[in-house]
Amino acid sequence: MRAWIFLLAFVVTASGCVSGATTHPGATGAGVIPRPKIVQGGPGPAQWVAFGPSQVPGDPFAIVSGADNNIWFSENVGNAVDRLAMRTNRVTRFAIPTKNADVSALAVGPDKDIWFTEPGPGKIGTLQTDGTIIEYSLPTGASPFDIKSGPDGNLWFTDEARAAIGRITTTGSVTEFTTPSGNPPQQLTVGSDGNLWFTEGSPLIGRATTSGVITEFRTHATTETSGITLASDGNVWFGEFFDHRLGRITPSGTVTEFYAHGRHPEALANGGSRFELFVMVDEGLARYNIQSHKFTVLGNAPNFPGVGPLTIGPDGNVWFTQPEFGTMSVFVRNVLTVTPTSLALSVGQSSTLIASEPTASAPLLAKSSNVAVATVAPAGSDTFTVTATGAGSCNVTVSDHKGNSFPVPVTVQ
Image (cartoon, rainbow, N blue to C red):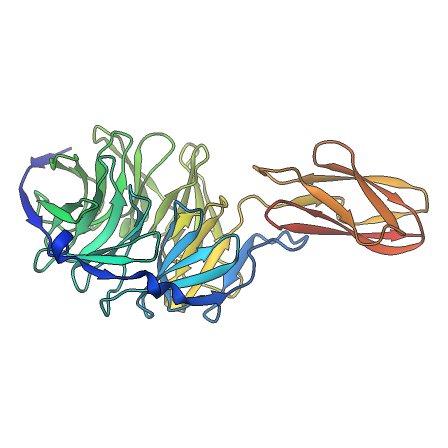
């Protein structure tokens, strides 16, 4: 394997740095759009929740889970960054001052604010907790694409137009480091070694230290690499879109590739559990086991096709946008289940319901819709005893702390 090591830096105090910053006050948070709750709501089990164009504004694109335990996404058409509040089930819009910002990526900064890239105007913006937006202009000709919070307390971004990896402090001071090959960097992740790893518009994977030393490692891809994330094995994983492969690179630079069974891997996200990656492929969302190398295609929510950026939400579910169709979907990883799914009893007879929801952070609850027909009482951890009290029918509904519910029809003779 051949690697190139190179250091070329130029320091730029961006025009948005302190005195030259373009600031937009927090009044931009005025637009509020109600939406349905994200709950399971039945015995499906409902593995998918989808939001159509009438429910999410402005063609959602970039998406990230915020430090405030909310979902944040950008509007490409609406030229805004939106906060989707998980508790109130409402969307608040924050308009970006610069027109046609075309936000391509969002990141949670070391200051807990939301940072975003604006490729068209060549800016990086930050949305503060009070709703104030500050935009920092980059060097002439810059086109920032991806952005991540670095281990050094700064933000790092890829500048495709200038073929550079950029660093911006939380006060707006910018430094860029040119890639040795001159190829444009695209997507970023922070490795287990504390370095920045990135894909390129070439068969290379790059590694940048926080001091600006860039090393490029050749893969076996025939064209560009795409999608990158740190996995639970301590290695960085990436996609080879046109070669139908997933790649793994160790901190020392050893590359191993795995065939993706004819699929085109795009965005990647660490599932947070052992050996699990989530990957966007042609058919939608897929789960990939980095130990067994098994691909499981999960697809899309019914009637809502399309693939885009993804993130693991504060609820542990997989959220992703579908820019081509102006939609957004959620794959519910931990579904509430109850067995049996219905009960037929005689008066005085009792039966047991067994409920399960992986990683539930609070005890499950159960309630009868008509205690004259049947009562329900806890009988242990996530187990309930249903007792028939009178002829008729009712529902015993098991629910969790998030509002997910599972109704069990009860018939008493």
